[in-house]
Image (cartoon, rainbow, N blue to C red; front, side):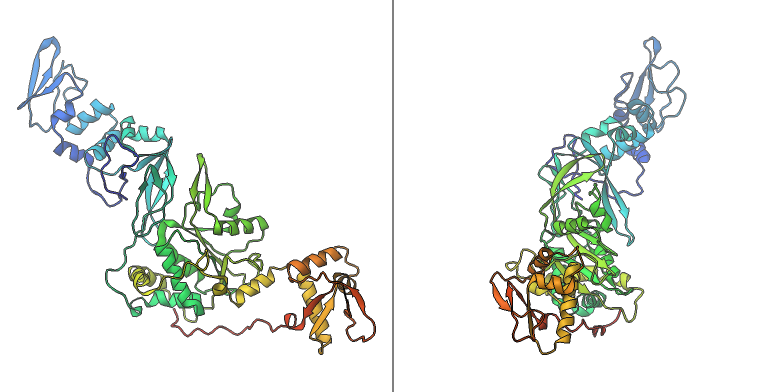
Length: 528
């Protein structure tokens, strides 16, 4: 947050002050008033009392004047004085100021002293016609994280009186400008919703042996795509505006390190990260994630098509309309990267063949669990950031809008998820055709038309029509043939009889496949 003082006439382009949780932590505004403010400042609102070079003069009834020494600690008002201050009580400077300026509201008086004289940052902002308070809360790792809460104008004036309203920084609207190295809270006349990055890179060069926990976790999560994984982390840190594929971490086993990885992301990126459940994507209000740079979704199973499509849309969205309770909708750019963690290895959501927005990683079981891994990861963050800056090469941005090409993120697990995402009829046809090839081991291909598949495999199923079969062959098998020709069909050994139609060619190698290996993946890196 900026430390520039807020003047009485605040312009939107000024960098505003916000409350700093560690600033003047033990400073008491009452003592500050009594020890530092002059009596002339305290009594200026009372026309019946005047301050001169060496005395305080109090107007009395009948035109008389009582005097007190200027260096008095407590002011005792005599009877018959014309002032509104109570008589015969020792009054400190703070008590006099609170009565004269705030009608005895001590809380308002303390706020006034704090903001006007002690240069403490004002915790409020006004955006358009709405008021907000910047609140700091420590997260589970002990880092202070700012959050913006809607705050009623009436509550602000009740706590501080209306005098504070002229000091509150004013903005025309919200914006989001992600930058982890050169942060600005105020962009022109807009309030930047992106949170200031809380970590500083280590000042000296870093070697791999100085960040063993970080690199071990990276090797465990990204495996043979380890170098790409480091580039992914470098982009999250140095290029928070860059769109990236949806990182999907899969494993049916427990204790694999998926949750440790997203907790580590949380430690690094703080309030620009949010963990949600899939149901949040289907809700009307989206302010919980709309201004975040990293959205993690744990234990992901996306069964509803609408939520799945919403997630795919968010992966490439350029802007988002923020819908927040009690606040008018506003539009901001959208820069979020999405990380999914799921125990469903093949069917956590539907991913089509043409989909290039998902990077799927299968995460193996941890051999030896390190119960202190998160503490070690947290302590290594400054060195890990320096390692990313100095030792990891920036990827080529010219190949894909999401940096990594479909060939780079392709692997057997992505293929398996896409295969599992196919329709029930596709799987039925695959099973039946595979059975036919197993019964006919000498044939390397099969030519059949959609009507032959209907007659052979689904003669009594009224839900499966010839047109539906043709659609699945075209859209999912990527097979079509508009030419009329002779073919043998399922009776492939018949050398005499031919059929006439528009057959498709089914290759044996595409249906009689080896199953995915069940052997555990090799993990030669050190356990954690």
